[in-house]
Image 1: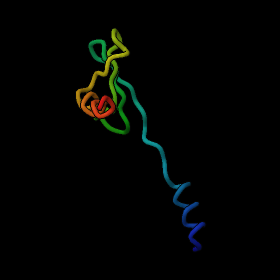
Image 2 (image 1 turned 90 degrees about the vertical axis):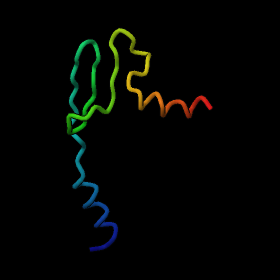
Image 3 (image 1 turned 90 degrees about the horizontal axis):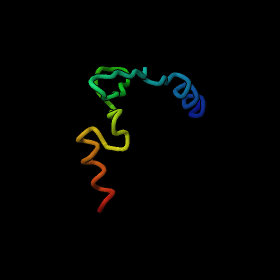
Length: 63
């Protein structure tokens, strides 16, 4: 198989993760193919960063 054919076969074989959303006590959570939370938003304060690890990552932008 030629490299371009291998690349095309790989691209068509890949699938996107299953996306689901849960909500608990005013916080909406994004899940990708698992129960792990990938993102969160407090409905009463949607402009605030809800998850601590995202807050930590965003600190680099303020430097």
